[in-house]
Image (cartoon, rainbow, N blue to C red; front, side, top):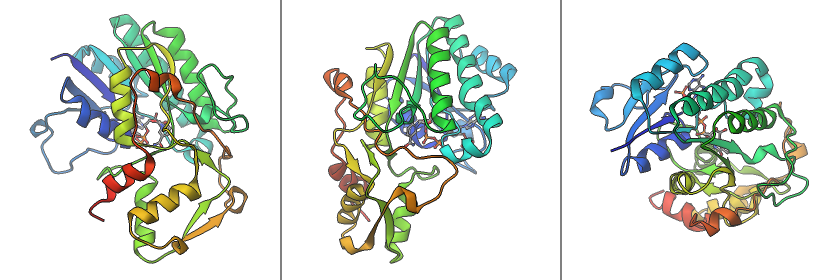
Length: 296
Ligand SMILES: NC(=O)c1ccc[n+]([C@@H]2O[C@H](COP(=O)([O-])OP(=O)(O)OC[C@H]3O[C@@H](n4cnc5c(N)ncnc54)[C@H](OP(=O)(O)O)[C@@H]3O)[C@@H](O)[C@H]2O)c1
């Protein structure tokens, strides 16, 4: 089997990537602060777990020398816009500098590299966005994703930038916006959801499947959004329905009602027709939520 190195394997998307990739690859997954199965010897897992701080260039070079991967999916990041806004120096090192170093190492090894970028490279005023549309980030996280995209595409000739939408899922050890929502609803608390924020959400599992499916088929940039544009409120309607709860559990609100460190884009829906034409086929949100929460 060929070796696939997945950075950020301890994170939300990385976990799905590892689970699915195992069927066809020998998977090496990196983690930083969170060992994925605390207490379980790493060697017992079918995934080779590699601890690393990706901002340490010597450690990164040693990782490539040890693993000698045939391909890399770089999914590690400081992925929360508010954290990036609050710590611009550290987040630049993680999101931009480490990403560019990974692209350099992939180019030196003559192997393909996939980078998980974000819908937040856009400002949200001109959706739906296609791959060729001009970028226009409105927060530091978005700016860092743009800088990483440009730096990596410039450095690595076998580069694929996957712009990811809002993703949901249920990963035991990693954060997703879904789990706190579900906990609040199940404890009887009403959930505030934006009526004026639109996304093209997709399940983490479908997103991971899409990345793995397209990584050999395309180079450059590709959008991996879901099939439907919907408000956070509409997403909430699907969520309460999947949990068999009444819609009165939802409290509609507007972005302006909730102050945050990082400015929020109103509508960063992605036009993913290119990926759809290449076989990417994510489930509808309603169906994905029912499948995910079937036992709830
Ligand atoms: N989730 C979404 O809805 C969404 C939407 C659009 C784009 N994206 C992008 O998709 C990718 C994956 O997102 P995610 O939600 O899976 O993120 P996540 O759950 O926050 O996971 C981030 C991963 O990055 C690792 N990491 C962070 N700093 C590191 C460092 N200095 N050295 C090594 N590893 C480090 C973390 O390791 P530890 O936890 O072990 O410290 C973790 O494995 C990111 O590029 C993100 O920007 C996500």
